[in-house]
Length: 451
Image (tube, rainbow, N blue to C red):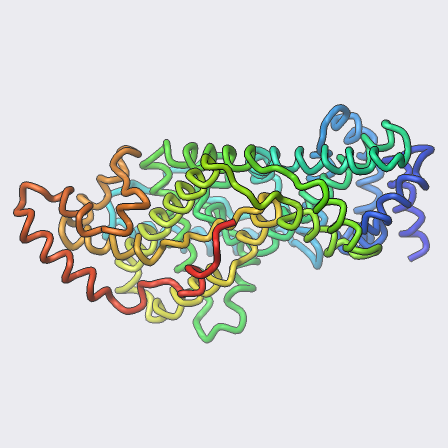
């Protein structure tokens, strides 16, 4: 342990140079205990990790010169958190097993949608591989807020006269890099694939599965692991088919989140208060302090509109995925209802993906209107068939709006006009007044106010 501590101190001196003690005292004053962070991130428990970090740190710091956030350090911390407790390389046998589940899922989906499957080979990744692939997306989406937090921290530290500007310029990017890394690493430990949020987090629309997360999710369930794996593969494949068919979709979602993030402002008084209240020696408290507690509560009119757009997009995506997955899985998965319920509960409670975005952006990414979206897709399928339902994704202007989700009968009737509008209205009202059991989302998801 003493050797680990000395190597960790060597790492910190590489970061702060001659001002190491002053910088570390300030970090502890802010509630961040670097020693505890090292232990929690796995740097002191994974063989060779400290040596690797120390050897690479000087070049990492050179790469981060002039940045508001030390993204290179964020990547190192994220990897450390992701592999904590072990992250073995995916074996060839495990990769083949999961790819067979994908192949089977694609065949089942062919009966539920005409959207074409991905032609690229599915990825079967470890947690560390997931981090490497998705961190650029995290940086793009959460970067504006991370930069705002970093500048606010620099103003706070500098305003108190602690250290010189050079020291401030090291502490703030380092803290925010650690913060980003902790959040992304925590998500990596529980992510199933590349579309857990209803967002595309990977660089391209390609089916991705994380065997260890899937296995840990299935532990304790009274469901055969093969069924759990098949259901998650179905959801991932359906998401990827949708993003491939509507190539504009991922870009519009990312742009909306980026617009929302750029409009977030930091409350300097709240930042000062919550950082001090976090107390020394508890990185978990500091991470909470650097999340929603420091964001100004007032939203501009543009942010409110953007938030509604994001929530509507997510509800429509998840509602469509649920619709086609249920149709595809019903003949094959005996425990389908239980699996659907488990995923809904995970989403309603706010899973790791939702918590990560709440931490980094102060933004809840749960599809609050999933129940209405699912009913809309089910009714449209009954009226227009799978082809008519899926044609809606051919252009963003064809998608239902938030207002349409409140009155799906009128929206669907307008889609079907020319085929007996009044009769369509009556049939739709009948369908929507008696939705199938099990297609709604937990009401608790609707009671949480938007971020």
